[in-house]
Structures are given as C-alpha cells and as structure tokens.
Amino acid sequence: MTPEHASELTAKVCALAPVIPVLVVEDAAHAADLARALVKGGLPALEVTLRTPSALDVIREMARVEGGVVGAGTLLTPKDVEAAKEAGATFGVCPGATDRILDACEANDLPLLPAAATTSEVLRLYERGYTVQKFFPAEVNGGVPALKAIGAPIPQVKFCPTGGVSLQNAPDYLALPNTLCVGGSWVAPGAMVKSGDWDGITRLAAEAARLTR
Image (spheres, rainbow, N blue to C red):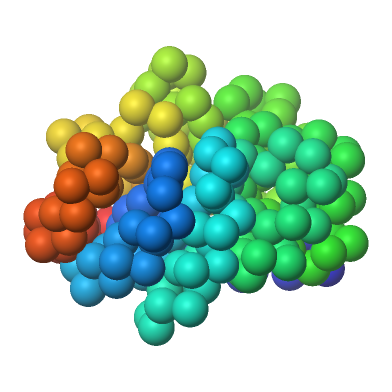
C-alpha cells in the first residue's frame, strides 16, 4: 500500500463522523456492546488502543459488529501492526511516525493515520505521501492556534487532532479548514463502560455526532 492510498482510505474513515472514539477497553466482554452503543449513537469509526492485554480481543469482537469500522491505536512496533491486522483492524493509528512503523503498515496494507506534532514532522510525512495525519498530543502542543498556524503554509495536509480534545473544545478544532475530525475518549468514559451504561454512551456518542464540521 502506498502512503497516498493510505491517506485516501484514512480520509474516508475521518469522514464517517466528526469524532473518532479513542477507546481503552480492559475487558473484551464489553467490546461488542460498547461498539454497538457508539455505532448506534452515530460514531462508527472506533480506535481501540493497544494499551491493555485484551486490546486485540477487543478488536476481534468489535470487528464483528455491523456498521463499525475498527482500527488499532497505539501502534508502536511492526509486530503491533501485524497483530492488529490479523485481529481485524481496518486502519491503524500511531502516536508518532517512524520509518519502521510506516514500512510495516505499507507492507501489511494497513492504512495508517500517523501522528505529527511539529511542522518538520508534518513535512516529513507529507514528503513521503501522507496527506492525512494525526495532530498529537494536540492541546499540549498549542491546540487550535498551533494547528491553524500549521495549516497556513501546509494546507495540503489534513488532520485528526487528538489528545486533550473534549466536547467543549472540539468545535474549535472542527472549525479549522485543515481538520477532518477529532479523536477523543470522552464519549466512552471508563466508569460507564465498566458499569455497562450503554444507553448513556449512546447519548454521549449522539451528542458528539451532532458536532458540525
């Protein structure tokens, strides 16, 4: 897979909804219900972070949920890329971007949303062919003003800002011409997942899905 094709596919994922839920799921038994709740609320693109021992099983369960588009976040090694693809992930997300990760995703035909935090990182990925990137961590790297400033000289690159994004500041990011969507964890709070409050999560998802771009 070429970087150009990967960016085409990740752009389609970003176009599904204004928010991509960033999910840290401890128990795979919650996976299917959580995915159904988010999809029902209007958020079909689901990023399952590889931060728990159950993450790959969570991806497997969510990949079976109708209407869901499941990706793997926190890809740190080529082995992560291979395992995520085998588990059923249809896109990947990385907190940064190294040649090893980029090579692995391209070799395994896994569309990647690579992250950048500086103009030099953005340009390096752009030179390789990635025109859709993750701006991470967004808030600590200057937030909306920083992303707006990056967009002035590099309008060719579009972003999914993630990291410190909330219901309150998401509209400011989404108003930027170089923002396709945002990533956020607020739509699936850990306490609500553990208690099985799927109706509550659907309400949060619906609220996020109504955000305008």
